[in-house]
Length: 275
Image (cartoon, rainbow, N blue to C red):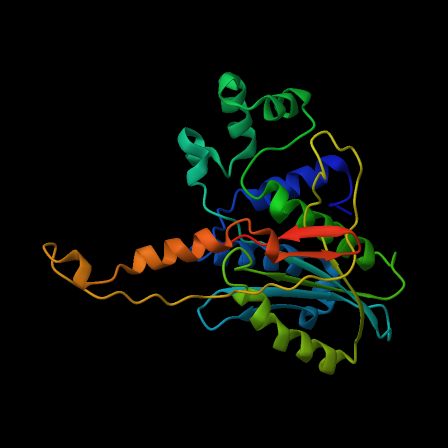
């Protein structure tokens, strides 16, 4: 087994981070292909090549799925993840190192004065790995590869089906196009989906919170849109036209951090933000 120890998982995670899989770029395709070939090379999938698949999306990107099945078992746990990341522009002068964790951390260590106190403490502790996507959510993806490996070794009473998608950070197109693939798996292998484990990161409830959380249930993703059409006019007659940007700004002003759009479930309050 090669994805079980802390060091093995760290190396697997670094290999994922080194693919700059920014949403909507070729990096997403490259990482999907890398994941596929990693899995395809394992003994289990060499014996069952039909159990690992690349599903091409309409735009040429891929959803990666891999099933580890225990004899004729039907009950199946879905391991859900996304492998795309947001852009690296916010890394500033460290942008070119954003997907090279070890080099990035060396560079940050040389300029620690640029870091917030909390980030500086984490860097100095040696317990954290910096880099775009290290938390959201390539660490979770590495854990799921480890779980798949244990299932290959017979350490799970049932089936595991990995479903890893692109485009989570933008329009959720990866998950939307993964649904037919899940239906196909269900039908072809007579599977019964009993649970879904999403290894997204957990977050502090307040600064310094040391508790570890497991979130249950599900959450929707409403992608509301507003179409604002302006009316052209000449610079000398500004009041004869209408600025679409002004309308968008007013919508944002009305929605941003508005407590009227909070929802509360089981004591957990979530505030929607306009973007």
